[in-house]
Length: 301
Length: 229
Image 1 (spheres, each protein chain N blue to C red):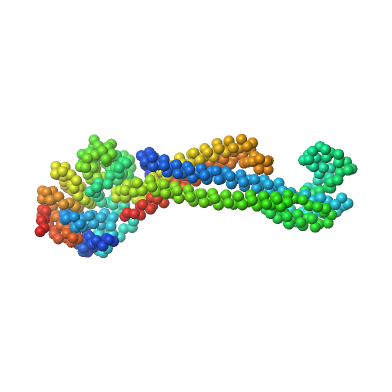
Image 2 (cartoon, rainbow over the protein chains, first blue to last red):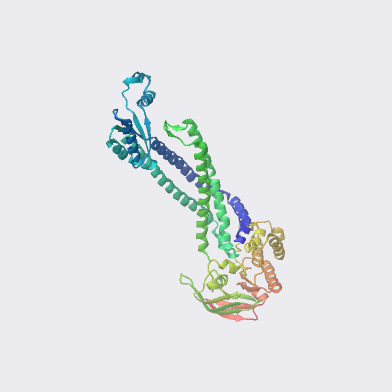
């Protein structure tokens, strides 16, 4: 182990030299990395945003429970405790009918102001927040509340919201599968390209064994070289991800058509994806080289 | 010491290269292995080098059972033996200096020692002024001397040379022979040299082992090329 660490500078130097001497080959391997990592980057951006859309939409869903106008204070507070005791309910807030009208006016326009005062046709209401994990149960919870005493009606986004959440979940899961598949493809592609570059040097490898180089001594510079290839290959995808996403973010005003679909901020998302791409490129380059050299080492005794 | 006992080697394609070979070569000996093409000379070298495993019998070199070595141990065994290949096998992307240094770097020698030893070796094989040249910039004889230099760089106990004069003109061949004799005398290195150069064998008389169709047909101490009918 100590010997290994001591020889690292040597291997590092060898890898740099070899990268330079086989520049064309190294660059072709790096460009294969660039192409696939660019795809991975785009899909990661897409998946991350769809995923945050889903969370946004989900957290926006609340159940509005209108209360029968003829209820005593006690009945109201007992209703509140009953709702709170339902599994999945997070929070219950009271909203008076004046408040409800104010919200309505804000949404629909000033002409509805005429209903202010005694003519207010709206009802007092409880706004029910549902726990994150129980969002898919929202229909059942809403139905349970409806059956309670003194409840007039319950509303939530309805089935259309549920459908949208289903679609987003499908996109998110599909995206994850796609990214995983793309990752596997990248490993294969890079391994293959590196295999070609190493194939051209398999005589070199057998000569190294001839003069007494151990397998690890031969593998290490190749693996470092693979890491360089991954590193260089990931530069373009990182720039594409960062600047491309920044441009998109600003030109769309930070949202995808509506505020509900707010895009994730450039720095936190694009930078972490850049980091992931870099790490991915370097690791894949290393593993690709390792697999390829190991194969050629076995060829000759 | 090199000791072969009842060694047979048959390749997968059915070629029976060596048949029941028994040989003993003492420390510090200089031995020729001669024979026509296909007589098993190259196979003998591959067995000594650990590149091939005998089908039966044992190959002992410096108390190592070469045929029983694990794949990962083969290179470590090779550090004790130097091999001069007929096709030189220099690393094309390294200079002559780096090529010889490589054989020392792989065993973890420190930089200063490596540099000193490489200069010594380059001096010995008269390639000092070609240190910075790449193998393809050298003539055949120069490349041959570079491989000899690499083979002897870490003071091996055994030097195996596969047709070291094969591609050279007579004048250069004599130069190489004198170099090998010098290594044999000065370092007491055991040398096994495969050749079919009859003028060399006749001129530098040494123990000569003749192979034919996989058998040892002659083993004469006084040397000289053996003519067959």
